[in-house]
Length: 476
Image (cartoon, rainbow, N blue to C red; front, side, top):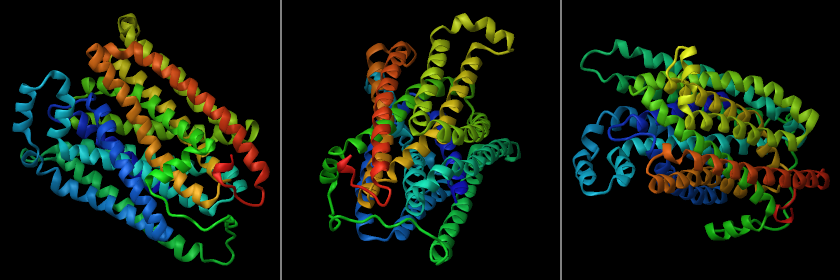
């Protein structure tokens, strides 16, 4: 099940970047605006809807009601929206707006110009936060005990990261099939249909697996499920404002949110600069997609290695050390990438020694930074975060997790994007913002360390007093 979810996530993640970064009048500069003004409102809206669904529907029906619309959209995009993009995209209007408005509005205009691509970008992002973080891990937390989580959560992702290798190579293979397209066929349009076809097929397998587990596994009397947390009072339905007040009253949930927001901000600050160089190196959509396929496969392979190391780190050093590996990795590799960007001329002899241009060297160093950062995230950060939910009662798990994962992650990325927007308007370009971004990255890593250390104390204390049940997040 997790294999299928991650297989789809990899294809969608790679495809959304290709669509937006290589689109007409667009580039990596649109990503900060997308994450701030499109992704974040969509995430908040979904959280309100999800909270109401949890209050009125069973977990099984919530799962189906979330996943099926995603798959329907991706299928319709490949066969309807993309083939009609030349008709439904307002290019004439946007050309007039470019002439009438200052140059600083070019990124928002590009989003309007390519609105269907922007919608795909949002849905692909939401697949990661909703299906991966919220639905799968929420289901796993429901049927897994704390002792089982310590033993198996670091290994959960091992099989899933094989999906990154397979999906990355599938993306690369599909990108190469453009040579089979006739002169009247859009090569990228053909690739998109093959990619979304694989997403829908994998989604069908995922739904069938989930149904089998609900009907056959969880109903088996020989299966021992975790004890249901005892509720102190009847569950109260809360609106968005009341839910936010409830969550903000818990330092435990705030620390969890800080971890997620810090990761989103840190990776976004480095990643956007890297993608701008990636577009310069690979302006063709299929060439860009092929590189991203190799990138995803490399991420999966490195993550498998980190998974093996992660289990040892959990067992030997505990939750705190495991939680601090990811911010350390992002901080160190981020400094390396920014140093190369700021002092590109200094590295010209090094690039020549490897038979590369300075641009390609920056692309590969940025890729290495992303691979190492994401592999530590998948192998250590995610298991640490999910383990932290287990001592909480069901209401805190459900609504707290929805707010932290579905709002926290986009808020982190939107925060990083907002910082980039301010700097771009202030200093004139993304490249000129690099020194300031490096300093801001250091501040984010510092806040991340503080939250992780604080949460480690709270998590250990919660585990010490909840051997036989779960506790309310408001008491920790």
